[in-house]
Length: 267
Image 1 (tube, rainbow, N blue to C red):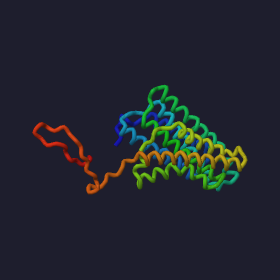
Image 2: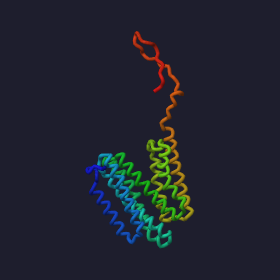
Image 3: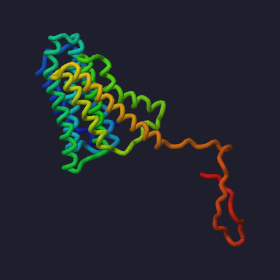
Image 4: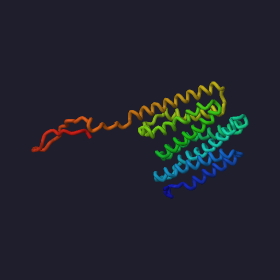
């Protein structure tokens, strides 16, 4: 249960109001689009409130920016849903593409803002970093669906790769460990959203868009591959069965009347 002091009532109300205003401004919507936006925001707030309850802290200045990014991403998901249900026809594309690209661009731009705010206010936290990462991952998944309407469903690999790795942790818990942060990994992650937005906007010839997505996917696979390799090397070794554990002769300082070296098994 979430402690009342950890519930950001005013920011939560403000974000729901922002979501409602955007949905009203971009109406009419198919019912599924509205459901996707509201469900996405509801699930996001449920997870965030639980995390705040465990963390025992409120939202910092940078977290407010990240939560706003999440709200805008919910509207991007609704626009993408409308486009999908429209059958990717010219009419549905024209209706959804422009606001989708504009809102996605704002979300991507704010990704640099929340990090800057966290550094300037010295309020960076593990929870804030995780929140930022989850919003990025959700946006990339949504944008991969939108880009797939342009280039084909193989583009979904960009959005699903991170969640496939997350799901694999059930079979291989060592995949849930941490690796040292690398700037180039952050750059590769940021590139995914930019490329997918460019594809959705269709501002380049089709062959160029295919090449861009292919390059982005290759870099993402490389990034995840090096991360998995690092986690594999850092995983805890399995203890050997008791019958196979070699005995080690270790000399210890013994009392004057006591025995000499002790024969011990390794701990």
